[in-house]
Length: 211
Image (cartoon, rainbow, N blue to C red; front, side, top):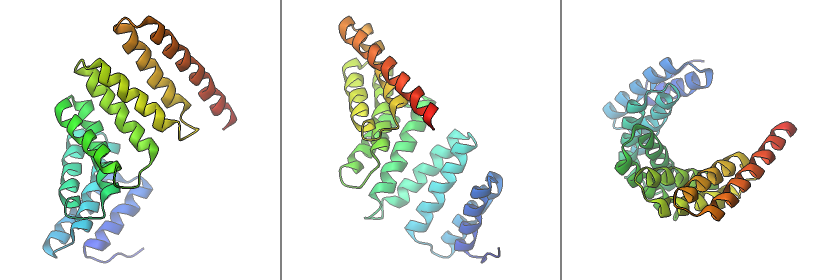
C-alpha cells in the first residue's frame, strides 16, 4: 500500500503498523505525523489523535512514563474540541489508571474524577465508568479513606452489572469489599462480600467454559 508523505499519510502508516503489531514502526510514524501536522498547521483533532494513539503504543510496550506524557498531550489538544467528551473521558481514565500504577495518587485521583465529570455529559461505555471507580477505590484505599473506597467499589459493581460478561470483575470488587469490611471490623458485611465474590467467581468459570 502506498502512503502520502503528509501528516495523514504517516498517521495511516502508523495505524497499519499497529494492526500488524509493529509498534516500533508505529511509534516512528506517529512521531513523524505529529511533526508534519505541526509544520502544516494540523488541527487540534489530528494532533490529539496522534498523541492518544502514541500513548496506546507506549502502554502496549510497557513504557509507562512515555504513555503518561502522550496522554497528557492528547488532553491538551482535546481541550480545544467541544465534541471530544467521550475521547477526553477515556484519556483521563487511562492516564489516571497509569498514575495509580506509578504511585502518583493525587494526580491519578484528579484525572479519574475528571473522567467521571466527562461521563455526565458524553456517551460512555459502562465498563469504562466501572473501571474508573475501581481505580478511584484503589486510590482511596491506598490513602486510607476506607468509606470512600467502599462506595467506589459498590459504584463499580453497579456499572459492571450492565455487562453480563463481567462476573470476574464483580468478583474482584467484592473480594476487595470483603477485605475492606474486615479491616474496619464489619465482619458480617465482610462475610457476605466474600461469599458473593465466590459465587461470581464460579459464574465466571462457567462463562469461560461456555466460550
